[in-house]
Length: 172
Image (tube, rainbow, N blue to C red; front, side, top):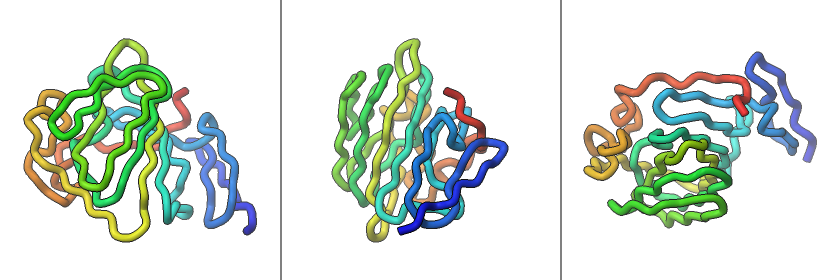
C-alpha cells in the first residue's frame, strides 16, 4: 500500500485518494457548525474511509453533537476532556473524561456539552454494509434542541432548519 498524497487547502491538510497517511488534528481541515460544534473527520471528498468512520467532536456548553438518532451499525465514543450529557434511550447520563460509550445497532442517542470547558470526544462508527439512520422525535432531546422535528430517515428533513456547516482551519 502506498502513502496517500496530502493536499494543502486554505483550511488545512486533507488526504487525496487511497493509501496510508499520518495527519495531526491540529493541521487537518475541520468543520464548524453553529448548532453542533466543531468536528475533525480526517477524511476528504476524495479519500473516504470505507470500513470505519472516526472523528473528533468538540462541543460547547449546551451544544448537541447532532440530532437524536439511531443507526443500523454500532457506534463507539470516548470522552477525552470536559463533560457532557449522553441522551440515550430517553435517559440522561453524565459523562466526563475517559468515559467510553458503546451504542449497539439501533440505540437512540445524542451528546450535549455541559460545563464551562469544551467537551472533546472521539467518535467511531462502523461503515461495513448498508447504514440506515433514523431520527425519531424525542421529548428529552427537544429540551436540548437535539430532536428532529418529525420522525424521518432523511437527514435533509431532520436538519432542514439547521444552519449550514463550513470548513475551517483547526480551531484548537
